[in-house]
Length: 214
Image (cartoon, rainbow, N blue to C red; front, side):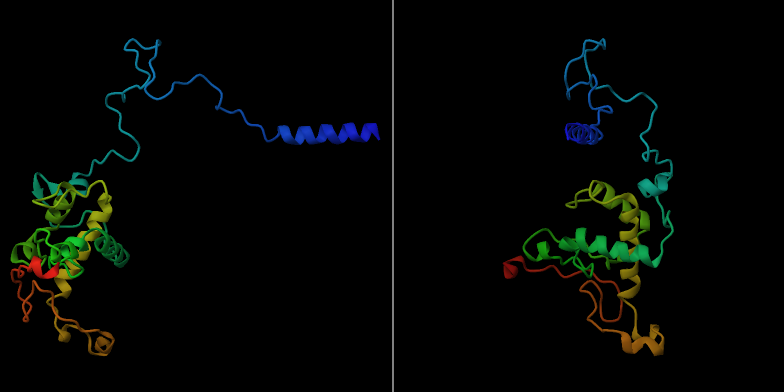
């Protein structure tokens, strides 16, 4: 019995030891921003080695990451755009853009109706003709009252939002006759956005009355 008990105890301890890991947990290390006597400048936090680039941050394609080529806004998408990309762009647009620009893109988002500065309508003559790089640059760097969204929206998602804005440009002035006859019964007709006239011509959006929305 004693031998059985000793063997059982040893087996249990051996099993428990298999759960112990040391790896690199116990090693000399500095606490964040602690002083160091090893380096001449006494800083334990070391700067990046000059000329190195973190993985995923090379960004040699300037058009993709700035929306410009030779300082000019590009007018072609630097990444492939599929239907799935447009759907992703619509999703990101509804999250980040609609509070000011509205779901229709007419500049009458919820915060505008509550007194915030009038947002741009994507159906103004200027923005209907603007190259795709312009929208990417505005999302990246901000413009006027609009702040930069670079920290919130990844570069490729910005291009997907631009693709969805282009889809709005194409769909808003479309006529029923533009849709194949066998698919028209599947459409749900809605009024044109405020920034577009009845005939599909871009027009400047009417300014809301903030006092009426409060």
